[in-house]
Image (cartoon, rainbow, N blue to C red; front, top):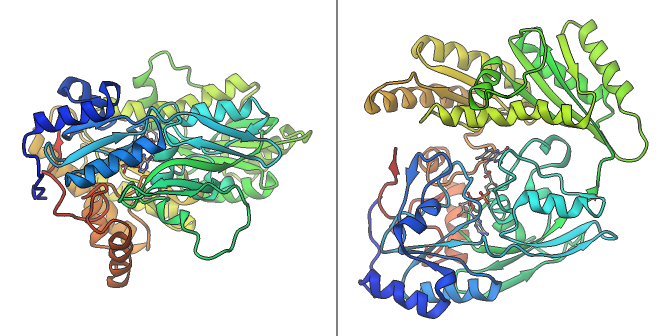
Length: 490
Ligand SMILES: Cc1cc2nc3c(=O)[nH]c(=O)nc-3n(C[C@H](O)[C@H](O)[C@H](O)COP(=O)(O)OP(=O)(O)OC[C@H]3O[C@@H](n4cnc5c(N)ncnc54)[C@H](O)[C@@H]3O)c2cc1C
């Protein structure tokens, strides 16, 4: 990456003052101490730089900022809750990038129970949307560990997945319409709440998963469903990790397709969750090579308990499961999910490690994990491999934690080896290197080597049409001369 941005105003101090004068002190942060939390990624592994952080409060202000930046040849890097895991929202140039935070655009514009839809601004925190619609007896099914911080604009821009994909789909399937500020400052109002609309190409799809490279999402019309009235949560101890997909298939059939989450939790994951929170209450369950954490939910008066108990008995009879805990209350169910959420924190506390977001066809999940475990143990015997996640979607977070106390160069070499091993297996299974987190800056080169010439031509063509001057998030997804320096990775 090279610093190739030439700004017409080379004096950053004067430029910042101009921004404060134009947009007001509340909307502009310029001091390093104030901008740091925006420039650092969630794990604290990397820190970028920017001329300033701009915090508009309305769509019109976003459009004005985009125009202001375009006139001064400044690139705009949008950011939501900054929980992204691929450095997509981290700017990389102290004189050429402006970080645009959507955090002040956090109004829920409408909730329409009759239409099962809502219109929300991009900066709404996901958990706040979920709470607001639940008060109206509705449900927004997107659910992920970062939901207390991530914003719907970020979810849309990464096409986030999470734990409920197997039932409700990725974010893309929950979006009815979008409002977007384009690279020249034009506002596109595509906030339709129609379920069916085949009038030409569905333009909103271009911006979903674009990671801020094609437009700034300022609001969204979202699809809601009735709020589930019952949820049964269970943690099941598998007889053998390779049985995980057989158990998944059984769960789908036995639970009448009411399965809404199916997560693989390895024993190391429980240990890491406990490390993150020593007060975490682990359930009384038999030691096992792997566990499945499942949710079954429904609306109306359907009694789910017998369904889940019958599934559990069948799984035991077939020798897939050796033990299990069925939550007897909502709070016990939440405690079980606490284990899954705590795993992320436990890994973060161990310091820099390899985080992957791989996908293979569901039928290949078990052999992929097995081969990955064997290869890591053979080549990197001191590292801790942790394979977990949304296996119902064929999505495995196969992470590798190096031993403590390694020199940085040695640690980086080990993580590179681990990545090469895992990606080689994924490629052999025709899998994907980014199932749900996106490409960002972290996976840009891995993405580049896996694109066909036709895909390359189409992606570049779309970018050239919507953002010909590469003003929006340059260096994210695709390389760009407007990208700044390499990010400082700690
Ligand atoms: C503990 C933890 C658990 C997680 N679990 C999951 C999971 O289960 N599934 C999953 O998919 N992800 C998961 N993530 C990753 C992350 O939470 C998601 O990618 C989330 O969608 C990012 O939202 P954000 O608001 O934080 O976006 P940011 O991190 O702020 O930005 C992400 C990308 O979107 C762009 N962007 C943000 N807002 C806008 C906008 N308004 N317009 C245009 N572009 C924009 C940014 O430029 C960047 O490229 C997890 C992260 C953490 C820390």
